[in-house]
Image (cartoon, rainbow, N blue to C red):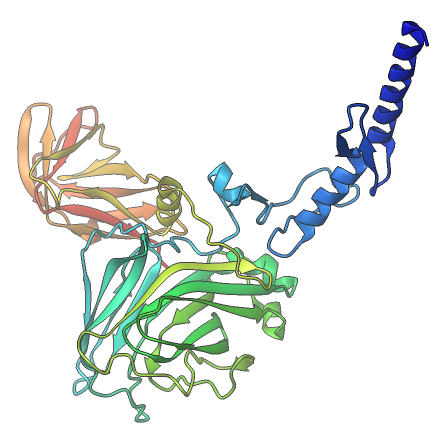
Length: 441
């Protein structure tokens, strides 16, 4: 056989192999002239689709006549979710579920009440999560803990509650962890009656039965309560799947008001559900079988990697970079200015926008637009200056403020020394001062 014939036959084999590689069906395996076997392009594509459709490797398909790809949920590449690779995710509907952000800056948050006098103590702790000690007595402290390299929301008993019994007049309870969603953050899932899964890592020194609750907030309260059994000393991943198939979704509003809430670790009160693992009309947040984890000083509950996602599977926790998480938290709470933690002055410079008599307005923009016009808290003393020097030490209070979603204006009185609108002025915060904006739910 001539050299030409040999090369021609080799060429034909190559072309045939290439044609099979490109046009072969979904089961075709091609043998190349060098003996190597490869899958056809159609087989490769089919195998890829099958992989992405497998449980735990979900993706949102491109629908016919739809030229936009919807949100990718959890495509896994080299063991990592797509959202982890690109850096900004949207699978987890909970903000600060990794408990990294603590804008309020406290090392501990203490909640004490007196059952005899029916006092209440409650509020936000780490960003976006709150708790309460309602008329039950005793005291607990919330801190930012760490578990296996992950930040946690940790609640430790200082003194046990003295009364967790509903007596018909006072609602006595320790709330555990509480998270509120805006209605618009879960509206798409509710109106389509999707399933959602709540997951978290739980840790405690108390074995027993603990509760999780998912509630519709607003005009009527409807609740879905589940329980889980925990063995002390063994951090445990807990997951609960909830069908959003209740008729209440018709009353849910797609706006920035409270829509839903999640509660974990509630004890006491008049809130024991009559039925577990189903929707019940009413404000129920705990199992009737709950264990009183607050029974002794030093007991604690600890939660990490809190996540709510679409579907019936608790997938790997979605981490969001700290700067993005901080920005999301600032929609609800922001320390606009603070000089509580150092001894140097903090200064802004600009023209006054208006003045009336001895008053003038100083305007500070927010770093991030708020959910709604926030409440403004002003702590401590300020000092007003003009280009000619010190005018006065001025006490400023919340009654002298105005805010919208974009910023705050502060009315500062300069003791009668009116500064013209055209002059340049700057405002220095003295040590111990702060300006805080809160648009929490």
